[in-house]
Amino acid sequence: MDRDDKKNVTRPHLAHLKTGSLERNIALTKLGIGAGGKIVAHSIANFFRGEISRDQADRDFYRRQAEVLRDELGQLKGSVMKAGQMLSLYGQYFLPEEAVTVLSQLQDDTPAVDWRVVGPVLERALGRARLSELEVDQVPLAAASLGQAHRARRKRDGLELVVKIQYPGVADAIESDIRTLSRLITMTRLAPKGLDLNPIFAELREMLHREVDYAAERSFTESFANKLKDDPRFVVPRVLTEYSSDQVLTTTYEHGYHVKDEKVQSLSLERRSALGRAFVQLFVTELFRWNMVQTDPHFGNYRIRPEADGNDRIVLLDFGATRIFGRGFVENYASIVRGGVDLDREQIVRGAVGIGLMSADFPRSVLDAFCAMCEMITEPFAGNEPGRVPANLLNERGEYRWGDSDLPMRAGQLAAKNAFSRYFRVPPREIVFLHRRLSGVFIMLATLHAELDARPLLLEAL
Image (cartoon, rainbow, N blue to C red; front, side):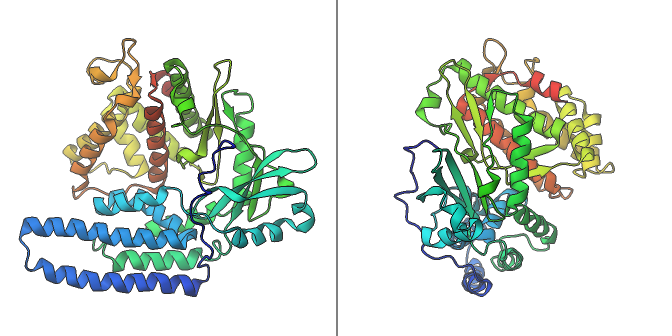
């Protein structure tokens, strides 16, 4: 974020956080009781509706239920809100479309918390003597569900810093929040009847404990910095351990622009495509070589630094959502990808069975439908092979035109068609978070309107 980018200044701040488990449970229980009454009224009304109007009424009902849930979670912040964000990812596999659309809005920036709430956390974490070495801007740079970031300056040398402060009580509230949210999803009838939510919420619990682990985030930040130190295309902030703790993470401030900023969008096609190439190469390297992927593709985690010499740089921020993937999973996933690119359906099936997405005894029609999906998704990596890519999505050099692609819509339609099969299963948790990042790469390249052939980058990593 640039110096003059203070988008949170004019937004209302939360002067109080509902951090106590009793206070949070009361808020969510009231929400659940209200939902229960609405469910009864909706069910009674459905007796008097025709089939078409009943379907529309159900859609409206799910949307309203999700909106109420979203609004309350947004006020609570903390782990319950972060879990709501994650539900929007998992939810695409089992929640009504209307609910997913509403819950996905929790991914957006949220109101900041007043300095009177987070300031004491910083002072307790660093101590008055250490904190006195810094000049901290009380207006936050950015606010999220688990914490917020503030600009700072080290007084003795003017070094510009970013101090990330965890909201008080969020780590202690995780277990209670997960139990309460699980009950709430059941009470609001947003999840299908009979679906076992325990594995999903177990994953959410594990994910939340990782995201409040600032020691792990510090380690991942340093690891990425070390791996990319010789690649001039990327910038990773330096961690200052003397100003960090289990609730505070301080790094150097690295300037750059949002990808949608005019300074980025006005770059030449060649420079924007070079940035896109860097994003793709970073992703395939993380997965297939390092087996370590930063899985949060939020645009706020990236900044673009245009350079006078044309060798623009990408600033990488926030490694709290980094995941380590087992070698067995990566090898099987690589088999699916390679099979999709090469139109080798046996290789796709071997990888899918190895991961647990498919079973070898599924009917051939089910396996073929899954293979067709994989072949479609790997379209940007197919090169200019005749018949693989719609002609309008290739430029005169045979490079994929990411900004003009309707692939997400086509893949979504095909997935929706297959999701109602009785053989459909919620994918393994690794897939959910990996595809979260993969979709982020696609959106990033589409936003850059990049044009490039990603096939060589993928094959090199494989």
